[in-house]
Image 1: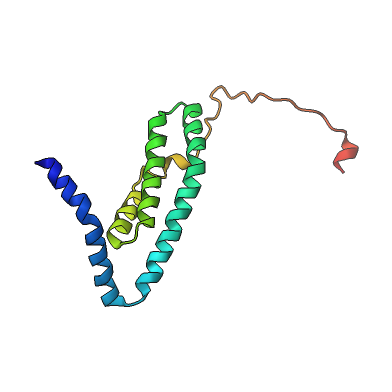
Image 2: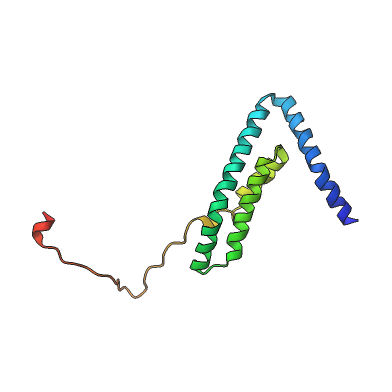
Length: 135
């Protein structure tokens, strides 16, 4: 019984998108075409960038000691949002926007700040320059 509802929902989704497009086109006119074109371009760009960035994000999460599944879920969320933006319609665009605005989607993008040494000793090498070179 549950499976039939899922199939019905999946099959009715394109019909709902088409009805939504016609309804919005009746309200605002030809600007709908511009919206759908810009959304598709943004979706393609998101998919292209994330296709290249997911491996670096996964490598960084493994090197930093965090769980790699979080990086994979964030990349998958961005790829799904890009695919939904490519699919024409306003319902899929709204779902993609919700996926992109989730707080956990962009959390793994910036590296965490490096921890300062706790013992107060800075290790490194130095070389003394003569005073003539400093002038």
